Length: 239
Image (cartoon, rainbow, N blue to C red):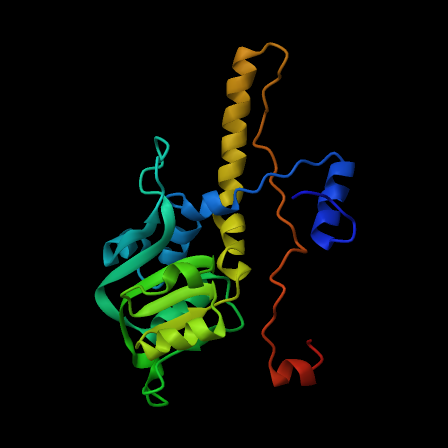
């Protein structure tokens, strides 16, 4: 940014944080690309109904865009994932797994080729999935897969996909990211901070070690800006 102004809502938030002495670090893209990061977590949701001990064996994963010059210990890092199932799975089963894996979402947006008759869409056989947390249009276009799974695609990107015979599932941008923080990263952060602090306290006499893991607070107000509503929600005063 060339300037900070209170006229921009997001920049105003940054200025308020700075005024209160609060630092901000956003590992967003790094956590997407990291092994066992957001995209691998999303890949796990595709087979949520399979026993965890055999879940990984039921699919083979590859990275869409590998990271160059990967740091030691982060081999396999990269953006996006392609998942190929050992046995084809029905689209309806995959959609249910995604809903449960992302916290019982109220709904998913699904697009299928228009030649598929009503009543048979949930039975479409899926052998491969291209996935990307957040907005995956630029990354997933042109992949030789049966299903595209991401947070959001543009209207024209979705049309192009189904015209090529692919299916599409979108769950809203941050719904494909947010639960990872609570289910995975919260505990990892607490453990890493605890470990690093004890390393520091062992070398500096002026630093006292922590007696227990630090608390990592997750925002209760933060949520996806979009909601899925039904006629029943509106009529019943639930929205």
